Amino acid sequence: MSGRAENSGGISREKSSTSGRPSEERRSFLGVLLALGSFCVGALLSVPLIRFALFPLLRRTTELEPSPLGRLTDLSSLTEPLAKTIHVEQLDGWRKAVSEKTVYVTKDSHGQLCTLSSICPHLGCTVPWVSAKKEFVCPCHGAVFAPDGSRISGPSLRGMDSLETTTEDGQLLVRFQYFRQLVSDKEAMD
Ligand code: FES
Image (cartoon, rainbow, N blue to C red; front, side):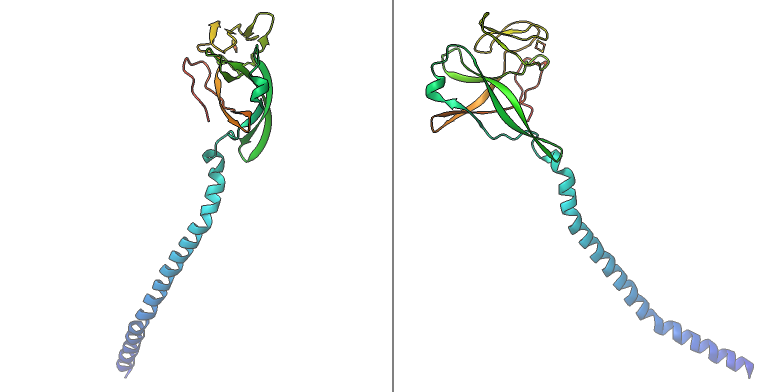
């Protein structure tokens, strides 16, 4: 009697475990589906976050909008370099800052208008025009440059850096750039 009961109990346990397999498979399939869905949603949501985090690395550090320097008719009669202050937009991480830069409008060796950065190519001091000497003389280590920016003497390995200019509606415009120091060839840094 008791052996039959155990036997019938064994059969019922076996039946119940066999009938539970499809529902377990369904549960694991739904689990995989849910994990896949969560991964896709997470990936989609993380795109703007990644773009936000990488923004300062992907963006140029200097805005390259040209700055006006004055009317060509006024500048063409220059007899010596003329200092001009321009405003340059810079991005420091996510912070936008506007800084003032001094540039010189002058004439190149062919008598054409050109614009020079006032940043010394040696170690970055601001180079003033010394009208009495008719030269640019850097106060830091004594680099000397001609009115067209070419190197005369001193530790700088090259002449003053010329900047890209354009004209629009009779105005001379300049695009400011930084250049690598302590090298003999002009190398833009933006
Ligand atoms: S920074 Fe101009 S000579 Fe050194």
